[in-house]
Length: 107
Figure 1 (cartoon, helix red, strand yellow):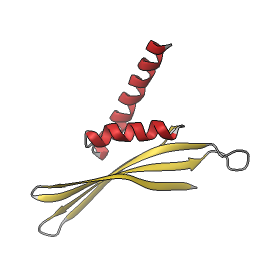
Figure 2 (cartoon, one colour; figure 1 turned 45 degrees about the horizontal axis):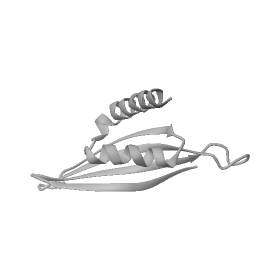
Figure 3 (cartoon, one colour; figure 1 turned 90 degrees about the horizontal axis):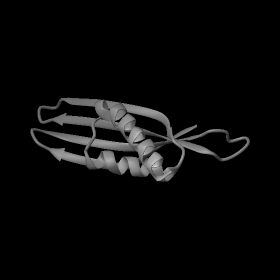
Figure 4 (spheres, one colour; figure 1 turned 120 degrees about the vertical axis):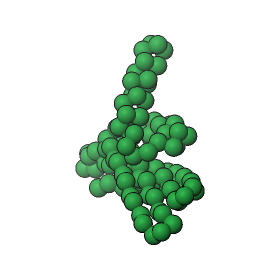
């Protein structure tokens, strides 16, 4: 079963109110044999216009991280950049490549 936990919410105001919500998606890999979990990310952008219109855009990628510390570190990076849902996949790919490069250098 998936659990969705709000990690951080950012509110911006211009001509419209923009809300960026960042979630951690927790999934149990095999509850019968162990309590191993994996973590995904969801980014949701809601734009509310003064005239009454509303647009919601979201993107979710499951099973990216296997350590909670890794997912929170990644979320700190993308919330600092105010990453939009359309940029989530590119951000994950870049982060993973950079992590692999750091691991190679420290080995």
